[in-house]
Image (tube, rainbow, N blue to C red):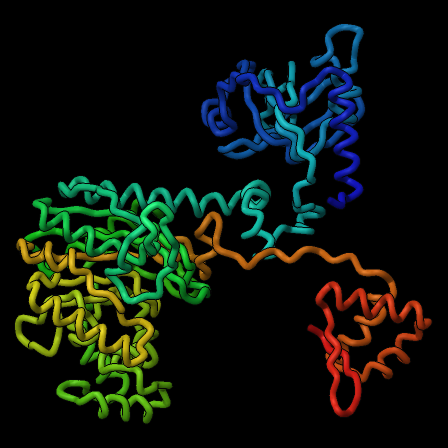
Length: 562
């Protein structure tokens, strides 16, 4: 492990602390009785307090020093005075330990008294302090001068990889996750007040069901069977409705082995709720009331800013059928059209389609390309074609459609709901149709028939409406974050590349090659100006690091960036 100069210095300080008999990582309880927020909100001059946190700024001024202590609630100024801390002749606690061995980022516990400085800042006068944890790596703390901030920790990849450092030095980031918890609590309260029951269903499933998505596959050694990470919990929650629960909901971790972008993470959180004796019309009303309630709980208002848009979550929301939406934005009416007619229409709209796509997938592509992005304010898209909704009840007025809605906000779906299909014969036929689509090459069609779920339906499921909400996407809208990575503590990342230390010869060759990507080996050697020995070591070293490769062609040897 290669350490920086600062890291080496901190390790030296660690050893000096230990040599003085100070444990830099004590195990005993530290009796904190106040937070920074409590001190400021209930301030009393001269009050004795015990606080703890991380030192985020230190300004040493000889016999006295000011510092900023950061705890879970914010920051507060602390004042270290040598004579207050060291009341006897021995001044080493201040002179040697605080001034020389304590660093920014260290956790300390402080016993002190409150006072107000001449400039009016509420401060803790330190009477005694204790090192609680020595930081061996310096935090990427932004520097401020003349009202400007320098060296801010803003690189997204570093922030997501080192969320612990991000939270420590960027306090505003924590507020996003505080609001995320408020959202979950508000939604849970809304459901509980309505009398619905929170449950848990399996994450490892023998059949990936309840959605159209590629699963992650694992293997159970004892049973010697493949298992699938949950892509949705829908079929299990419906089993509970069959079993007699009137309303069940779950906040579930789902896993889909698909692409990653600003609105998709392979591991995500969804909420699904199922209520018996209801339909999708009732669920639209319920959804409006739920989201208005949640927006107010999170932000104190039904309005939220997302990019350049002000979204109003106050009920009611606009409602439009998928047919009317496509007709409005394309002029094409999907009603009573064959698969080939819809495919031809999509091609005429310059939408990329292929022969593996069935009627439902083609309609979905048209809607996604031409309509979806137009819905900024919350809008219910209703009455989807049957081919798009294998788990949804046939529309009561039109057998070509289903009783389904999706809620669109800023061009993205955040909720999906059905009048649930409870006819076991119809459900089996829909599953079998999905199998045909899968064999045709549709990689989003299900390749499994869940016979146990069909058996459950055969026992009878009452009329039911269900809804799923993408919690990560919803909190993005409520906190004005354009990327899903900003609302996940630990988003999925590519493996971190190890830093490669190159020799001077390797660096010289690489710099020349970067300008052209691919060069004749002899020309590259000539331009490098290296001796034969230096060239051999340099080019071989780059190959070992996996940075370059040599290709033999009829025209000679060429070197290119790997």
